[in-house]
Image 1 (cartoon, rainbow, N blue to C red):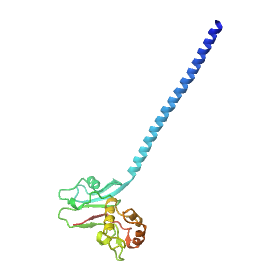
Image 2 (image 1 turned 60 degrees about the horizontal axis):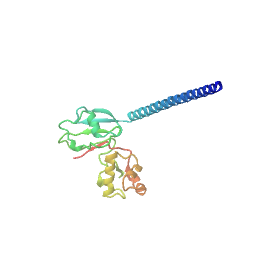
Image 3 (image 1 turned 135 degrees about the vertical axis):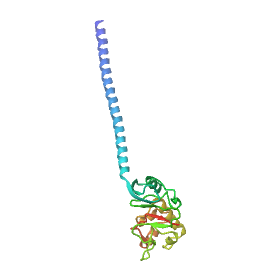
Image 4 (image 1 turned 30 degrees about the vertical axis):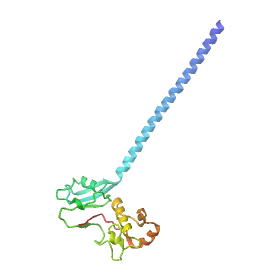
Length: 210
């Protein structure tokens, strides 16, 4: 009988020991899981903060002039458009001629946004480029030329000229000849023909017409 009691006691002790070991293992596992969860949250927060910092660093400096409430130089985010710049400048005045503005145009660094008044004659706002889109050497300023001027280029008809203008208005000025590959209908062979006839180093920063 005594032997039986000893065996039962031994079994109970073993069960208790195993139970304690299992408890500590589970407890440690839960702590590790919680720590991993915190690390994941912290990592996600750090990534988000880093991304926000990067976005904040991507700025363009714009000079807003003309019929706005508060003309001046403003910093805006890359990807902002003309209407963002006008909003930062306090909005349009009552005599502003909004019809002459492309409010959806992407902003570029060092751009001048000029808001004309009603009845004001059409004008070109530009930097470092003659009023004509064609220079003395006969080259075409791709970021200024209208459809008729673009059609003077080899291999460019009305459809491609319209595509170039549409892309330019949506995405901003072309910086190099290879940017034209992003335009529908223009391929590497067209680029080879166009390169010597184009000007890219001078960027039109704003244009208003009648």
